[in-house]
Length: 167
Image (cartoon, rainbow, N blue to C red; front, side, top):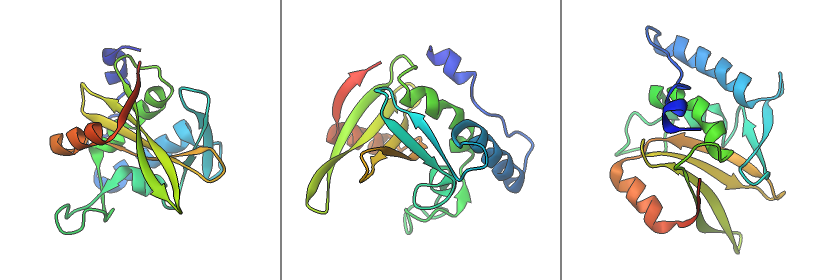
């Protein structure tokens, strides 16, 4: 898939207030990433590893598509809908499946309970857009979030992570 083809997938919430956009976005998320009426959905990453999308919880819809109204004082608070994240929601699947040309697949190491683990980071350089996927104890993966970070944060992500592959 080309960059232009990806751009054409962008969702449109023009003319909607925040409540309407949230409801439409949630329905769109359900249709793209959840399995029927289940509170989760199972999809595949570019290397056929399973990735779980959650409706609620630590890595649910709110975590993925809301942001903080006070990024300086409370950067991890998720209290306002981020329309940019919502509009780009349809991009997540093609990006993590390795279908989009130019996407960087990267790994960033971290420590959890004395073990070295790796998060997966997918970067679309043309947009400065990132998708994070977290490892789970069972060996599968969980969609964590997707957004457009600041230029400084994106540079830091790229500096701290290992480029594994470019699609």
